[in-house]
Amino acid sequence: MWVKQAPRALISRMRAISTQFAPAVAAQSEMDEAHDHEDQPIWGMSNPYDKERRECLLCAHKIVIDYKNVQLISQFVSPHTGKLYDRHITGLCLQQQKRLQKAHIMAKSLLLMPDYFKDLRFVKDPKLFDPMRPQRMNPY
Image (cartoon, rainbow, N blue to C red):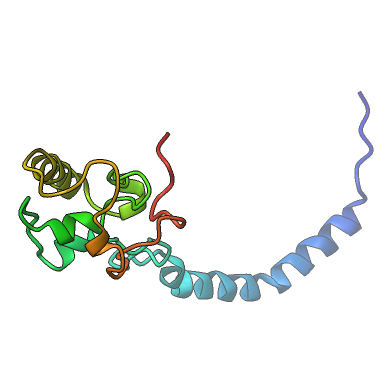
């Protein structure tokens, strides 16, 4: 195959131009090396996009659930069905939800709480959460 080559005069002129701009290229590479450390990630920094850790309502206030505290248990009971709200609605952690379930069962078995509705004495208690706006997504 025959390849057409550039004339020698053009090649010598290109070499002169490339050596003429060589100091600028060298200075640019020195600047790149000097500023190279600024582009490195900061390792000790926390992630600004992390969500804030939500703490359970009972754990945050260090409240101990007892089967005799019927007023506290009734705040987690539906006024229509008498059943406990699920964890995703109440925002409780797993341990506190299990303790609440055990206390609720114990209070119902000792007839401290009604089975199928919320006790009328506690219907007007302040709401700890909104059942229509769950704290977490429904796991089912």
